[in-house]
Length: 188
Image (tube, rainbow, N blue to C red; front, side):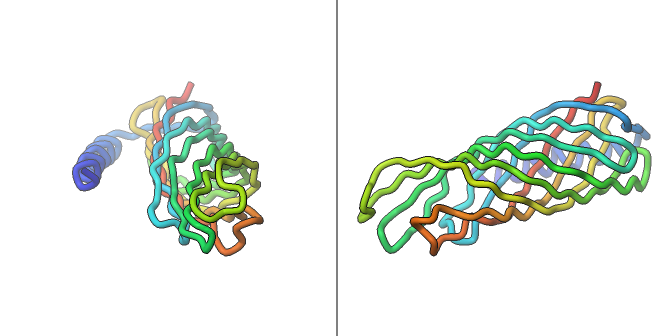
């Protein structure tokens, strides 16, 4: 199933890139909103997780900003006390620095902060098994590229490294990790 999704995604991305490079669109001094999909993997997690969200972007020629709201599915951790499963709802903001190489292609660097609403589900030998929740504050650094596909829409692909402290009762597990995402912003 993952291979099929990857293949379909690559075909769609290739089609968007070829269409966008055939046309010249310039999007600047605009704001927009759109969907966002991605994959997050912490080094200590047994598996990564897909996520879905919404992004709002403002873009000038060289500077921009982004606000996102996402839902990240379950990641499992094996600890000395048993099994831990977490889910997250990140609310993040980023500042972006664009380097427009052509009218429709602009790589960027980004840095930002976020509040990560984290839900814990403890199983096994924990002192207080069950559910718990907390808000963690983290920051991220990354890079990506914006590709205008029309006069009012842009496709974006980015990588971020997330710096995030975990639960104090489980100090041996790392929640920082790699985040890959794709989005489509409709500007107005």
